[in-house]
Length: 246
Image (cartoon, rainbow, N blue to C red; front, side, top):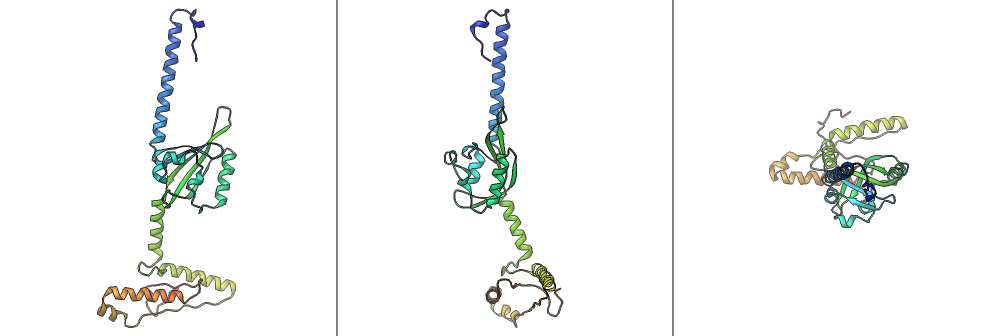
């Protein structure tokens, strides 16, 4: 609201009241905008704002920390700046389809930091409209999932693979055996299971120590792995000789 000299003929005190109200409203809006700016800038999630062409107009401090790019390096670029090439084209098609239709998109993306390291992110992307309902900006809010993904993969590996050789362990090989048996029955085919043991291995360990014993196990695993087909499985298990593995 603008006040001009033409309002000076208002009743006494009314002009002053209107002037104070205008200042108060303006001050309150400034305070709200300042708070909102601080919340966005100090948010623990990465925030990026682009125009409707995807050109970056703003990134917050967490975006810079997550990606390794300074604000000046990011603004004016497009999100291709952090693409790893390992997120499917179908994902990007779905993102743009939703955004251009005025809808939100949520999902996981594998992006790349400035130093080349990969980062998993859970992204929420949505359009911003003006008072007329026209889309004027796109906003991306991203949570770094890298540590969570690494823990997930490490747990999966510990659960399914032998720590020394990296071969499938008893749990995983039993699962593959069940799948192979089901496939063989369905296709009327046959398969084979070969159980191998290293003779006098305990004596080797006692004579030369655990390091030599581990080296022998790893070398044996490598040789066996290189001698089978790609769709065969070599595993290190703790199945006792003579027992039925399935």
